[in-house]
Length: 136
Image (cartoon, rainbow, N blue to C red; front, side, top):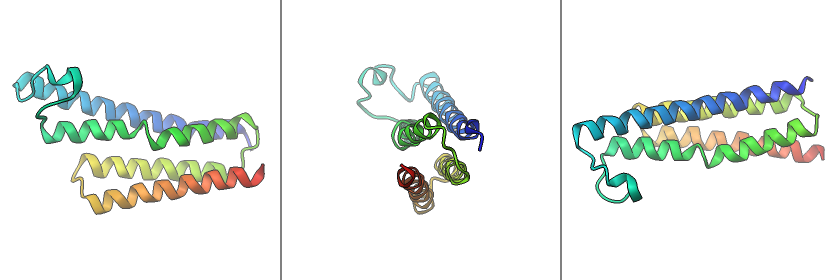
């Protein structure tokens, strides 16, 4: 299997991260313009903060937690030049569940559904790591 196929899911997660960053920036700008947030908050992220901004900020921050393990796995798979169909399937499933998690978080933020999407992303990522380790 062509190893470039494992790179595309990484690009998808990068796009999700950028979308999350843009969303956070739009919410931040809205609150700075309306003066519902003091600019000094940005110095150390301390003090009162509107709920929608905190939600967007936490969501963006989340893309530098679990997805890091996803990127490392894809780098290992790519570097060993041993991509199989399960690697690609697990990678796209991870993207799907991260996208679902993002959608839930940025819309109704219903925690039970958000938790399910997150847990499924973790399980798929764990399956991807197990699939990789078993081969080496």
